[in-house]
Image 1 (cartoon, helix red, strand yellow):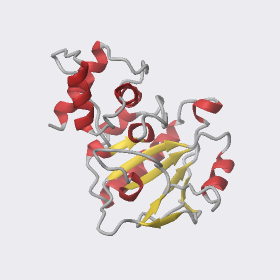
Image 2 (cartoon, rainbow, N blue to C red):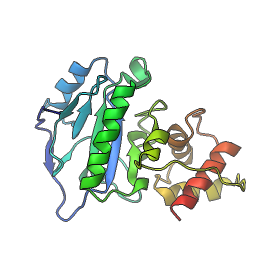
Image 3 (cartoon, rainbow, N blue to C red):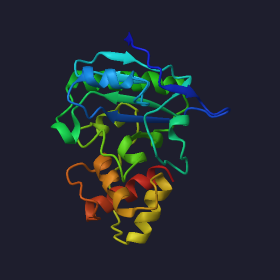
Length: 223
């Protein structure tokens, strides 16, 4: 791991514990451009770690401090996600510049780093999320190519089994998504974020049987 300290951080709120882990993609054309941006005081953006496509990790902000990565966000009633989270950026051009699968070595580095972070902080599995989960109306990262299922198999986050019973009632499904953690104010955006994380084969913001069963299955895991 290489030290590449960013000046873009501040103190966490007194008494706040780190209980959220947020993954992002950089959404820029090159790793160099993103590292420059994350260390630019004028940009006012940062993360705790940046993982290049070759698996190299840059440490930008000490986990004791609040990095500025989540922006306007919400998770399980918490709106200061930055104040309670560790943010990890993965180099990837993103949907704007040619989104592509993450190399295996990059995903392996991300998983190893995540396991280390989980050993240091009391982060529940349901709080291992993507930027799109905490900002569903604004963000799409880390996107459909992020291998959440393999992470869950390594003890990082959750992956749902589909429920046997099919419930297509949108009001009940909205409550399930809100109970799990999603912002309840925009149902379609929450569905789309859920699909991007837990059902990436079709991300359209509309309820279908597979999505409904996975929402119910995921809710049952944390009931």
